[in-house]
Image (cartoon, rainbow, N blue to C red):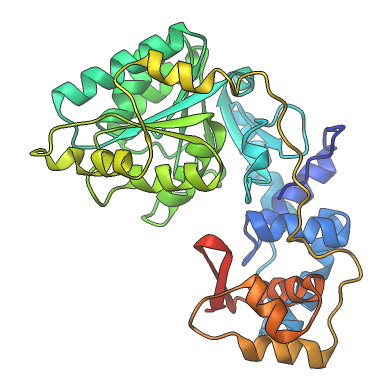
Length: 372
């Protein structure tokens, strides 16, 4: 789901400010943003419609709407820091990222934006990495860089930083879980500076000044995989953020690669499990390159955006009540709501949009929804 047309165009300054206001408004996430943009026709019209949508969703009060002054302040601060805000409808937006279900409407980019147009591969893994794991990550990143790939990772300790440092000369992308002026961990400020001074870049969807919190890291992980042709996992425990990135990669249709490790090392339990589940077993960059070579040069498929409510999909009170009555704390699928309510897909999606803007809907993995 995205807002990019076949003939990508640049936003005007006013449109960019309105896009920023909309995505920074309460209860508006990337998925909701794109639904509103298609339904209302423009960010400006969506901003005007927000209170009514929230009222129809049962909100006692509508969510806070980002003011024009606050948006202009963020844009001015980004300009001062050398950060560009690239919209998902613009040609400079990463072509693979725009194809995921919930691409950031505006992507903050600090450094060489042209690196985002190159073929990218992600390398992720344990923060508490072994010396052997870090050495292997460095080898993979160096060899992939020499082969013309930009290496993507999350600037974390362990495997991430090892991959970034080995790929600085060839180009690497650091995806942050906070604002681009809130580097985490702080001891990687030197690495961040080296990346943006070279042929690489740092990117984030979050506002300047935002300090990363626990729930921000899975959001970041979907961008790591979304930018990339595939994700290489080097050392990952059974419950780790790297496995979340691998799961996102699978959902986004990306290749998942895993480096095998000793069954006696808990840092390898996750990667060994990935191999059992069908991830590509790799021990060198050549293995990765061989697997992704058929993908290179293939045009990206245009999505038909089936889950966006079209203009005019306004439910009646009876339909709305019937759909809301089917929802509860247990997650259900969109298909079940359509079948059980007897309403059209567009009407069901519209009701879900209203509930989300009222702060009453929780979206879960696999397209499931529940009342918050």
